[in-house]
Each structure stands twice: as C-alpha cells, then as structure tokens.
Amino acid sequence: MAPSSKALRADDTNITALHTPSDLGDNATAAIAAELNKLTADAFALYVKTKNFHWHMSGPHFRDYHLLLDEQGEQIFAAIDPLAERARKLGRAAIHSIGEIGKLSRIKDNDSAFVSPADMLDELVADNKGFTAALRAAHEVADDHKDSATTSILEIYIDESERRTWFLFEASRNADGGGH
Image 1 (cartoon, rainbow, N blue to C red):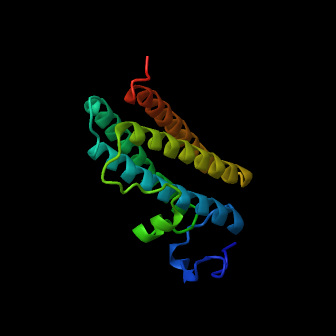
Image 2: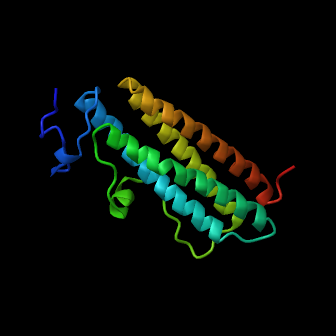
C-alpha cells in the first residue's frame, strides 16, 4: 500500500521522489523522523560546540581536556550520519541545511570570546544531559510505534551520551580544584 503524495509532504515540499517503503504507517514514520531530525540537529550543534571548546581550551589541564573534547567530538560526529540515514530509511527527509539545524537544535550556541575551562565543562555536562533526555524522548516515540531498529540505535547513543556526561562531570570536579 503506497502512501499518498499528500502524506509525503513536509513543509509543503513534495518529497515523493525520496520515498522509501516502510511497514510502519505514515503517522509513525512522520513522528519518528521528526524526532530523528531534531536529534541530528542537536548532534551537529553539540559537535560544533564541543569542537569550539576543544579549540579554545586553556589552563593547566589543557592537554587532558583538549584530548577529552576531541574524543567526544569524534563520537558525536559519528552519530550524525546514522541518525539522518534512519530518517531516510523510514521514507522521510533528513535535515537539509545549517539553517534547518539552527531551527531544530535545542543546544544553545556559545559565541563568547572566552569561556573558562570550568564553564566549558559545566556547559557541556548540561548539554550532554539535555541530549540524553532528547534521545530518551525519541526512543519513547519510536518504541510507541514499535520501531525496534530506531530504538536499538538510540540505546547506543543514550549510553554514549551518559558516558560523555560522566567523564565531563568528573573532569569538571578538577577544573576548579574540587576533585579528589
């Protein structure tokens, strides 16, 4: 049963040519893809912020924090393509542009000329916690629609995001001399 072209419209743009058949219904694929696109935008924004702080790190723990943020940036970047491709596998469009990333992302920019290492780590802890919450919310939507492939992917990213939060939190305890 092919979905109608009306069901395949997103923001009044006909995406019939991009349609991929799915056994999930139109409502399911639309809801799940909407969550995946927000997560893709969040991942792009979190990646850029993590790299920004990586490039602008300073202070006595520079090397450790610089390497930590580089590793975390690579991990976040690696999640972007699978998230976007999952939306496409569902027969929906993935994000198209930086403008769309800006509209969909829930990660706040930090354009400050200088951010202290402690503030960088604290901000990334909060951002990764927020990203984890968004991943869980998307998991719930996918689970409600019995999309086990999406839930499986998201479970991996939830674990990775929790680990990043943990490492950043522990590093932040040392950033102001408050560690063990």
